[in-house]
Image (cartoon, rainbow, N blue to C red; front, side):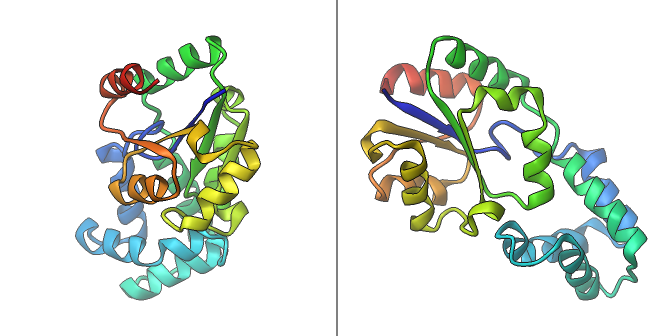
Length: 198
C-alpha cells in the first residue's frame, strides 16, 4: 500500500486571490509591499505553535509601527484564515478520484492552529486518513524530523510514501528522508506525475 501525502497551501488551496490578500494590509493600515515581508518574517514561530495568534499579530504590527488591539487582532486572524481558504477545484477533483480508488491519503501542512482547525472542518478533509499540521507537531517542513513523524503516524516505510508539495525545499527534504516526492505546479501536471511514478 502506497500513501500519497499532500501539502495544503499552494497545492490544495490557491494562493490568496488579490482582493483577499489585499484585505490584510488594508486592515492593518499599511501598504502591501511593507506588510508581507513583516508577515513572513514572523510566520514560522506561529506555524510551529510557539506563539499565539495574538503574539504573532502584535509582532507583525509592531514591526510595521501599526497600532493594534484585541479587536483588530480578532479581525486579522479571521481574514488570514479566509485568505488561505480558497481551494483548487482541480486538485480536489483529483483527491476525490484517488480516495474513491482506495488510495490512502494524508495531509502534511505548515499551518498555525487557527488555519489547521479550519481545514479540519472542511467537508473534503474526510478524504485524508491522517492530517498533520506543524502547529500540532511543533515541527515544520523542511525540518527532516517532520518526515520521520509522518511515516511513524502512517505506519509506513519512507519508500511507501509519495509526497506532493509546491515548495522545492520541502520536496528536497522529503527526498533526503527517502520519500519519493513531486513538485506541484498544477493538477494536470500532478496527474501526469502520478501516472509515471505509480
